[in-house]
Structure formats: C-alpha cells, structure tokens
Length: 409
Ligand SMILES: Nc1ncnc2c1ncn2[C@@H]1O[C@H](COP(=O)(O)OP(=O)(O)OP(=O)(O)O)[C@@H](O)[C@H]1O
Ligand SMILES: [Mg+2]
Image (cartoon, rainbow, N blue to C red; front, side, top):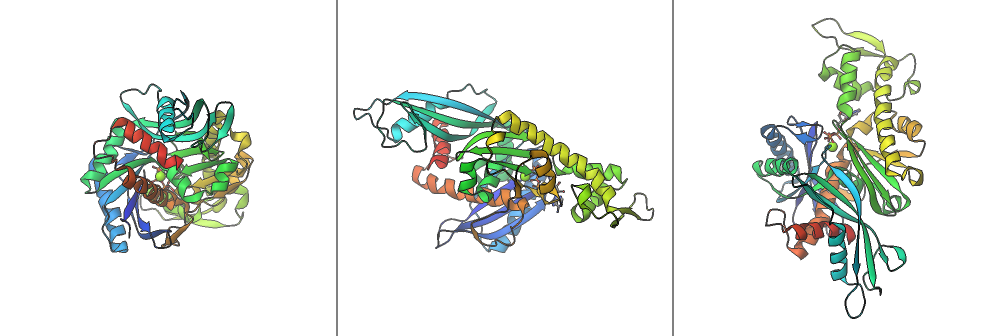
C-alpha cells in the first residue's frame, strides 16, 4: 500500500481534511474526512496562526480517527487575492545533434518561459504547460521525440505572496504535519470534479467559498486564466443578518435551510421562521423575502465572475460551460442564477472517480479537499521519482520544474 496522504483545505469558514491512498485497483480511495470551523482566516488568507493550527489539528485528527491511520504528508490549498495568474512563453533552439526534442529541451524551454520578473516578495506556485510549438507547427501537447530546430512553450504561471504561503506551511507544521506542497485551491477543485473532455472543450471552474470566489479557465486541456475574488457566502449571510435583523449565526442557519438564489423559483405562499435578536419572539416571513435578499448578492458574485471571464478573452469558447464548486454553490437555485448571468450551461461539480467514502464527500464543498488529495497523490508519485521536496532544500529550479512536470505527465 502506498503512503496515506491528506488533502488539507484551510478555508475561510471551515478547515477540511480528506485522507486517502491509491488502492489495489489503482483508484483513489477516501478513508477519512474531518471538518472543523476556521477562525483564523479572512478572505482565504491566514490572519491568526494559533486559531488556524487548532482547526487543522481538529480536522486532521477527526479524519485520522475515521481512517484508522495516521497521515504523513499534507497537501495544502492556497487562495486569496494575492494569487496572480499570467500567461508566458519561452523559446529555445533544439541544439542536440539529432535535432530531436528530449526532456532536456522541455526543461530548457520551460525555464525560458519562467523568465518573467517575479518580485522578491512573491513565489511561483505552479507552472502549467498549455501547449508547445515545434518550428511552425502549433498546438502540440507532447513534443518529446519530434524533430525540429525551434521549440516554443506556452505556460500559465501562478504566483502568490511568499509570507502568505509561509503562514500556511507554518500552521501545518505547528499542527504537527509536514506540508509537502501547496496547490492553488481551484486547481484542486477542478482535479476532483472536471472530466478530461470538459477541460479539452473549454470550461470554467468557479469555486464559491465563504470569503473568496476562485476562477480557473481550461482551454484545450490547459489552464488559460485564473483569478481570485474576495467575495463569497459570508457576504450572503451578512446580507441576511442585516436584512432580517437576526444574528449572523441564525442568518447562516436560515440560509442553509431555506435559502434560494432566484426569487421566481420560490413558491409565493411558503413561509419560514426567523429568530429575532434581544429575546423577542420569532417571526414568520415569506420565503420569497429571504430570496429577495439573497438573489442580488448571488447575481453580484456571478457578474463579478462574468467580468473575469470576459477579461480572460475565452468566455465565448467555453463549450463545456461552467462548473460550480464550494459551499456557496449549495444554495438552491445557484445553477439557475448562474445560467441567467453567464448565458451558458452550468452544473454543480461534486468529487468524481473516487472509491471509499465517496457518498460522504458527494457535495461541492468537498471538491477542494478531495481535489487536494488527488493532486497530492499525483505529485507524491512524481516526487518519489524525482526526490525533491518542499521541506528538503527546494532548489528554485527543481521546484519550478517539478511543478511543471506534474501537469505535463
Ligand atoms: N447548504 C448550503 N446552502 C447555502 N450555503 C451554504 C450551504 N452549505 C455551505 N454554504 C456556504 O458555503 C460557504 C463555505 O463554503 P466553503 O466551505 O467552500 O468555503 P471555505 O473554503 O471555508 O472558504 P474560502 O474558499 O472562501 O476560503 C459558507 O458561506 C456557507 O454559508
Ligand atoms: Mg475554499
């Protein structure tokens, strides 16, 4: 049996640990899940280490108890507005005697593509290959073995604030777990929920969390655009709390129980109970009144996403439409609201192609945690071959190259 790995989703509202391994049928088997409220983050970024550490300990311990195993390596998700995604290109001459592209040329061209100026306070999280060109032939996925004199690579580079990433690593370490790597959160959600066909056809994954909404656009199998917005389900809850004059905690309960993102989809006669503040008696209101508070905020989130999709320049070629993940996508009518704004097919993404506790994690809120486990397993398989490690002296090129390779192979 291969080592057991944990996907650690340190979100703004909850910390979620998903434990699993690759079983004898070569499937990813989820064996334990733990979830604990987060109290140390704002808009996806750690603002209190101690609180974050206790959430991590609680989530992983619960998952370990369920799995009946202890975990070694943790793969941790990172998000927040400090994350930037940009496209870059590199060109090299194929200089070996056979004029044949080998892994050496791939390594050189990826290095060339990474020669963008990265400020000292930022670091590369991913270098994702999009496509290669050999001489005048474009759109090549795997050029190894081809003949040519000129090799060009197009990549998508995701960078983040070094101190923010350090705080994630520090929190995991203080909780007693070794963090093997950080992964941009929505890439993990995509890994858990999207099919290869969707990524080839063109699809946008939108993860609506508590404090952030994350966007990744896939075109022809590669990442073409990524972005993070500082808005999410917390804003919906806060609107309900103000609109119905009820404490945040009850606004959250009401949202989850009765919330709806589209007013017209709610029966006009349906009523719900709202607890009041200051010991006054609870009131009954029409459920449509609640939807009237939620709808504009959900539309605002979708419209902000829509502007990002327009900025990506790829909105018109998303043949597979939009996939929504994150707890924010669990609100009734979310798909309908999104379809109205984006004007294309929308579905909710739940983790796929897994064994074990698949029914337990069959919600969009677990997409991130399960995806971190899946991505982590992929990375750890590669790491076994390359023997590079985040904690064990990461040579800058080694890390960058490794990050590229786990996307490429
Ligand atoms: N059934 C539900 N109906 C409506 N909203 C829900 C439901 N379940 C969860 N949510 C909302 O989803 C949000 C949390 O989603 P998620 O767990 O994906 O976020 P997070 O990972 O903690 O935050 P982030 O990704 O922004 O850092 C909360 O705002 C919560 O109210
Ligand atoms: Mg999240």
